[in-house]
Image (cartoon, rainbow, N blue to C red; front, side, top):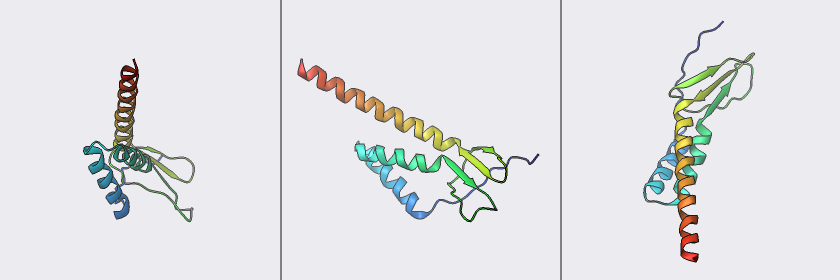
Length: 107
């Protein structure tokens, strides 16, 4: 049985800039910023690679759960899962507040 290891892989600059722009838009209250954050965190959640594959997809891993299926390594980034859950929660609250405001304005 192999031991679990955390792997640090640097995110490509384009993805980092996308995350930064999404964060800036979200801080200004723009919904596109939150949707960008949602996409950014979705891209960061899982990494999977194998020495036998010609390709692999990786994300910047901070704290992760490591799964070792036959011939591959699958990492689930817990920080990205937390960011994804927080983004979804904020978007849901904004959605509910907007629709509650429309209902109250209509009555």
